[in-house]
Image 1: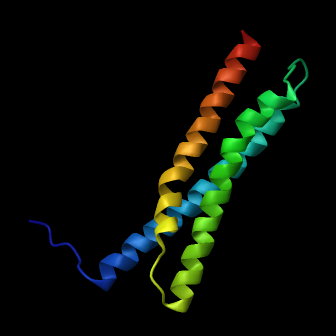
Image 2: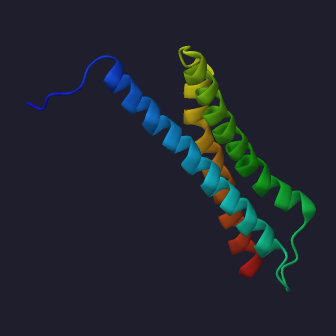
Image 3: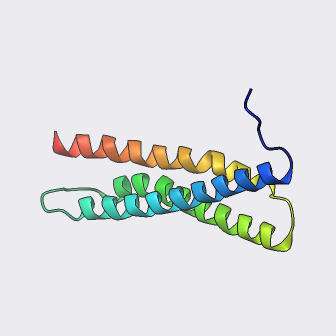
Length: 114
């Protein structure tokens, strides 16, 4: 049987993973926004503004949730408070919003190129 840490040490590892996850989501979402904008500016692509907005809104929302989650974690840890439930909700919804935007981008890209 593997001995697992209990108490504050285990909690701090979980918080560190959650903070790293938020940093990762922020970075990946910002890179994706840059990629979407780059592809939308390529010659020959005739993308409508509302189509681009449909793709960028969920990705931007994912970026906002991930960055806000990281900020909330820093504020809670620096003041010695417990993490709020909203931080855990953002950890659940940020990847979903990101995947929704990426899926919309792929659908848009396939529709434009074929």
